[in-house]
Image 1 (tube, rainbow, N blue to C red):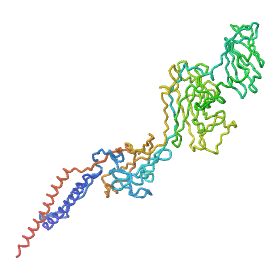
Image 2: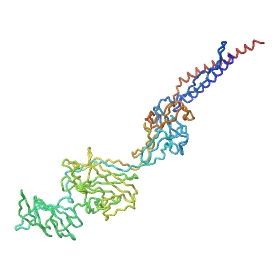
Image 3: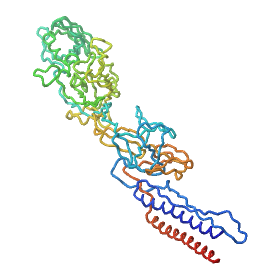
Image 4: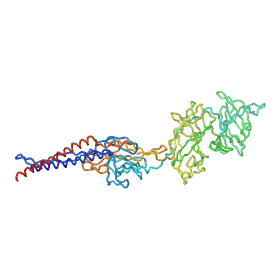
Length: 591
């Protein structure tokens, strides 16, 4: 009967508008809920099976279905919390209801409510109690993402990030050595004016004598007078000269006994021999090794031996020294010094790299007193480091055989790895002292930068800068999250370390996700399966830190919907009352 169907249609209208009112109420209640997606009640007609013969019509009524606009993006609002996150674009944060022991088969929920805070165990948890998931950093500092493997995801934990240190691996040096620095007596040749020869009457000669130690009691001695230069080997026993063997001569030649030397000068082209003359070794300070022992030698009379605080310091006082702070693997501070002594040769300096204190290192021969490297440094006439000259020297002559590959290598502190100064196999080895308990370390020195480096100019010896990349121990001071979803820990020593990367899930039909409590969504048959992506890739949105996504509810639209829903509800109730009155008239036909 059409009258009954009209009444039932009115009932369906009441039910449908009630459902629409419920959706509006839910929207208004969540107008301030972070990441909330509005819903609306959508109506569709119901048509009953009927026949139109005889002009009859049966009303089917209306049915309501709730539609959620999950893919609609809300406005982003700025906050002051680094762990407040929003997604600019498509996608959802992947979350779980438990922080630990989450397997691949455990339920994952998806949300855009990114008001995350650090809980008592260090996990990032939002206001609904859902834990943020991401890909962790492996032991090599890499992040391995996978679009479908949930087993790779972990709840992001920042509470497990302790203090950290970075060992020094590179040092950039910008310093100048004064080109007019006076040559100290330890490096200079001894000059003797008016040395008389054995002629009658005697003839005076101006002589200079320089020494280079070649053995325990032997020295390479160079005797210069006029344009003649004689080089030979002086041998001592109990401090007294026992022999001198000439080995080379420039503009002259020589023969010698244990007490004197006879020099035959030559000059001209072709060389013409001059008048030989004999000089007494005693008159040139060569009769004993007293003077020779005062000369600089990296092994027995070095700059490393010198301590200005001693009452009677031994060794050779450096002309200049510079400190290099080095951070070890534990964040401890180690100090290295480069000590410089100007050579008698133009544009050349002796150099030693020394650990301070010397007890910080254990070294093999020929290093002593904390030495790590010893050798010569050469400069060009324009004051720049002479790379080509140093590269052409025999191995071991320069401070570094190749200044462009200047590295210091330290073996780890290991009591089982002994270094024996008497064992040739341990020569030139350097390790950190066993008591330090620190790891092996290689430090590269940048001595020849375009902006400075090591120079020799006619200005004061000075260190402009020493730039190192290592850091001492530091505590966690801040957590930042960038657009790519990388979670980075920042320490108070300036070190930054990546912890994890936030995973973003996308769906073929996000509006078909199933709503669950906590402003989150679950996978449904209609939504399709998830696809895990890094933020900003493959259509996934970027992560915006210190921002939250607002609710997509528009109060003006909701209040308008309230009015129309109320009117529609009232109209449906009128259908019922009208149908009731008509039925009453029908019943009253028979009284």
